[in-house]
Image (cartoon, rainbow, N blue to C red; front, side, top):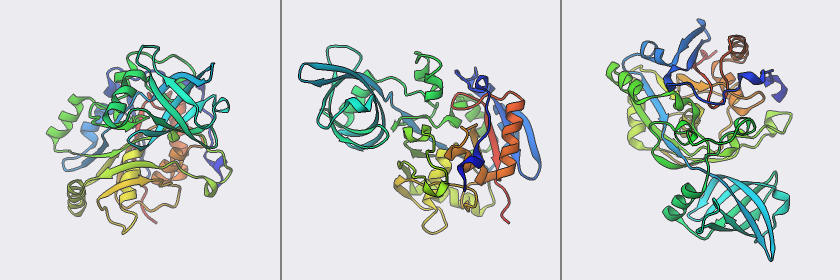
Length: 355
């Protein structure tokens, strides 16, 4: 499909720079291909969801993966910055570098906040579009702790271009159920949940299941091709445990609805069902790219924020609820002043009926 089909105009004042307070006060556009659009709030999930529904969340935890420092080359010093986006092994990460043109293989890097204990690394790989591979002197849990100490929250560029990173972002850009370090971008639909809302949903009989997909910075990258057939997705690592699979499959057999919180949860569940058409345990990389025509096997409803024009995520929601349905929904959201992107409002999408 032509990428230009997924373009739309978004006024810059619709881009949210801070989340709603409290989190669950955000607006929620309910999109039902059969019944139309309904303007609600996230707290209304208590009325919309039914006892027995299964809410599937991504419990990845965002690392403060934006690192700044200097390139060391003889007596030369050059300021550089990196956004880590994918772990390769215990001591190696892929990253996007700025300015990448000033870097060469085997450059030594001194990263951190200017203290006496910098984080040291060597540039061991250099690819296209500013991507590099960094091998750190530290490894494993020790490296993770150093990244947390020296790094800043990697806010999306459409926020970072408008304001500086703030101390509150350490909490704002993390879900209340985050558990496993590894993401460099938040699963943003989950940012709307409070512990109180989750408890109220549990009291109603809505079941919570956890999967883990470590979101990469590739989610922010614009598509640079004219046709979706030419786009290559960045792979992300995820896991769906067997016990979770068993409970979700049992719920589906019982006719209960599977509600994915975020496109990351949906992409992981559908990846785990690709081999046989039924949900199975999964652990590994996924580069699934969902466009209109995709056959969904697992997810019945999707809670997700409003996405960028021409993005793979706008293509995904168009595949889920229908191309024209989502174009109309986004036009409605823009007209009604919904807040867009990572810190913005949310939507609850019903899957379009199969033809």
